[in-house]
Image (cartoon, one colour):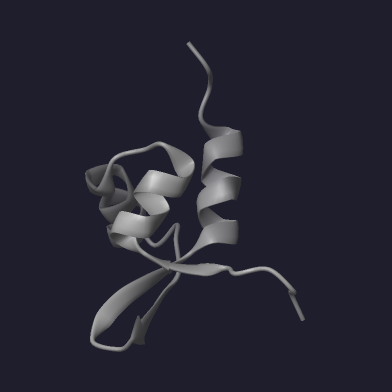
Length: 59
């Protein structure tokens, strides 16, 4: 069990990881980032986002 927060709203995740909400939504639609429903909002998994960021080549 993780001791850190792993589920974020799209807006929270975008701010935390410095990427756009549109990019996160693309990953969600592609099945690369897991989602859950929480308090009426979609939550995204931070671990999945971190994994995708590791795979994105730096410019």
